[in-house]
Length: 260
Image (cartoon, rainbow, N blue to C red; front, side):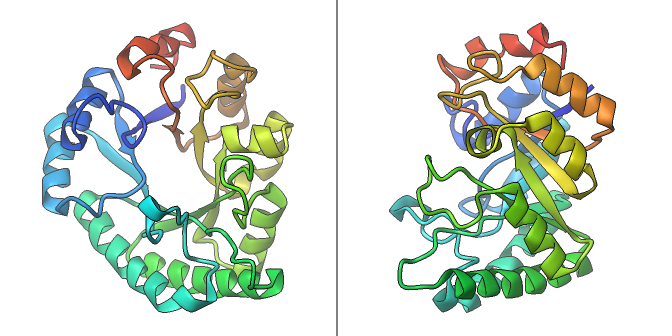
C-alpha cells in the first residue's frame, strides 16, 4: 500500500494555505509536501501538522525568485552564496517541522554559462548541501524535470541524476523520481523504477497529458502502484498534480485504485 502525501502547493488550493493541512487530513492523507514553507512561520506550520496528525514529508530548498520564473539556483555560478544560505534556512525549517528530506531544484541554465560549468557548480553545491544536511539528519533528493513544462531546466533525465549522485559520492543524496516528468522525457516507467530503486528517495505523481490526477491520462497507475509495492519501494509518493475539476471532486481516484 503506497504512502501518499498531498502536495499542498497544488491540492486544496480552494483553501488558504494554512487551511489546506486540515483539508488534506480530512481527505485521508497522512503526509503533506509543498514547494516551499518560507512565507510562513515554521511554528505555525508545525502547529497545523500536530493538530491534524500529519507527517511533513518534503519541501524544496529555496529556489530563487519563483514568481519571476526562476526554478532553482543550484546550477547558477553567480548564486552560490545564496544557495548555501538557503541550505541553512531549509535546515532551520526542517528541524522545526520534523521533516527528514528536502529536494534540490537545479534551475534553468543561463545561455552564457557552459554545460560543463553549470554541471560543476551543481555538483559542488550538492556536495556542500548533502554534508550540511546530513549533519542535521536530513536527506537531500534531486529532481529531474521535463523540458516541455520548464524549457531549459538543467536536470531532465534519469541518466543525469545517476551521474550527479555518482559524482557527489554521498549516500545522503538520492533521486526524486517524478512519474509525470519522466513519462514525458523517457517513458519506460516501471523498468526505470526497478533499475534505480536503490537511489530513489522520493516519488511524485501526476497523469499525462494535463498533469491532472491519476486516471485522467495515459499512465497506468493501477499497474504503477502495484509495481512500486512489488519492487519494495517504501518511501512516500507525493501527489503533485493539478486537479482537473477541484481537489475534493477529483479524489475519487484514491478509492478507485484502493490506495487510501
